[in-house]
Image 1 (cartoon, helix red, strand yellow):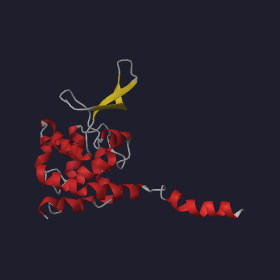
Image 2 (image 1 turned 120 degrees about the horizontal axis):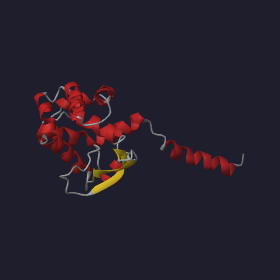
Image 3 (image 1 turned 180 degrees about the horizontal axis):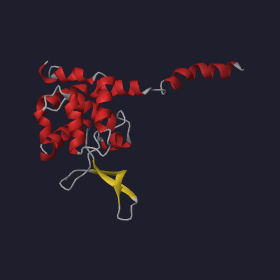
Image 4 (image 1 turned 135 degrees about the vertical axis):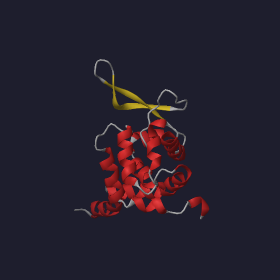
Length: 183
């Protein structure tokens, strides 16, 4: 092996390793970036920070999905008939009359903060989700099952997936954090 080739390998190994992220690395970066925002939204609306973070992790593929990176939509919220903002289209789970998968309309945001605020408002101010607010912000298990019951996602294991993420990444600790705006 030539010295030049060996030198190239030595110089590029750290560069290549830096792209070899595990899901835990991606999750931890996502959590660190958005935990304060999730806690602020919990104090504003009563939605557990753990639920918000677990949904964000799940729906955005740790912040790396095209929906999250291109449309800043971390929660997979579709347009609905009353949406007046920007939109982003991609194939998800909508079919035409002939049973063909078609592009779904998703909400697009100017910033990640807008996505988090709209997610909170989406749950807080839609009667479909009103029953969730009977649960304490520390009761993430009932919140997860309630979201599934209310039809937030079509996945029949949605609650189970959220709960596993909360437990795996210790997200329930944020449900008792002090509001970052008052620190």
